[in-house]
Length: 174
Length: 317
Figure 1: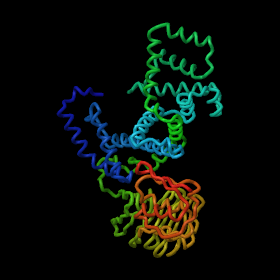
Figure 2: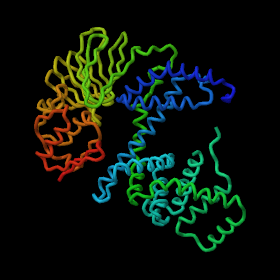
Figure 3: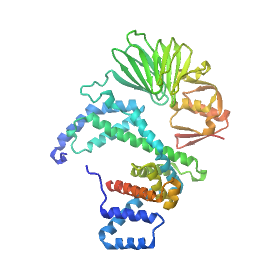
Figure 4: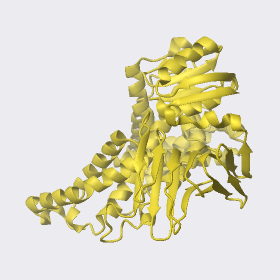
């Protein structure tokens, strides 16, 4: 990969302008059609280009539309996850007694925090995720978790190690 | 790019923490752990980093009611997520399949998409003079060429007015089957488990994925699902006449009304299981979902709660 210091800032800017000019309209149109919502499409399109801007050497991109598609797909998936989380949160909330309802501000912050954790746990199987959360959030011991999940204690230990590893490595990137 | 890897001491730190959490750490193991910690700076550093990162990661939800965060994270991570992944692949951008990465592909080639937003009904004219009226929150792909006129209904519903063309059959594809126009005017709606078709003028031929087929005449309707083609009673036609913005129901479950209302309502509409089965009849204006919800509270034993300006929960009271 070319180091950015080898590409002059002026040339880089020119490349980015051209990429934007040639492909933003196209990407926005495709997203709008697929997502059925201009607002979401605009958000995803602009976030996609933000990521392109952050690349070392945008001039080296051979298939811009393929790259834009890949980035956009990843962003859409992430936003589906956030919506899924939000829906789950509100459903759980709806089952809580009235006294515990948080304020709108608290909800926004809570969802951000939950989304961050959800992202950290990406890649864990449903059982591994459950085992890890039972240990981390509820403080259950492995005998209890094993009984809940219908697996052996050894397996629970493996799940927790996997969960800790996944979190730890994900946090390293931050 | 190399995948990130744990150093030996980081690996060890994780194993120790996992052991501590098991609730079955013996005294011997505890002493061994303390020995490991004391052994050198790297071990202590790894242990401290692990603790610190975990604490900071979970600090964000520390203030929440204990089970709220856990239930949310577990629910969101369930197998529904896997299904979502599949859905994204199915309904997703799939641009490669459309050949858009081929050089020189024009923006408005023979393959194009039509879509509508929440609460929006819109008519689109097609290249051959036919037109489609799309219901709210609907999506259609058009694929016209020299041999055929093919539409793919991806979401929602459409009402087609088809101009005659002897050389090119007009076909609408859905995951549950296809509809071939033998005449001029019909509507088609894509549901979660079936496709529903009603004919206004002339005839259509239905072909289910299982190979079943059926010809429908004006005023007739049918359902396409994994079992094949099923005729529907003529009386239910008004349930699918969304094009004028009115929904007429005769003793149908509330679920039917809410499903028809969702593409017209900003925000999430949740219907509880026992409320969904309540029977309802009447004429409902789709374009005014708030009014419909308000009137529902008056005529049925329901409790309707709104949260955060976009989540509405409908329950049996």
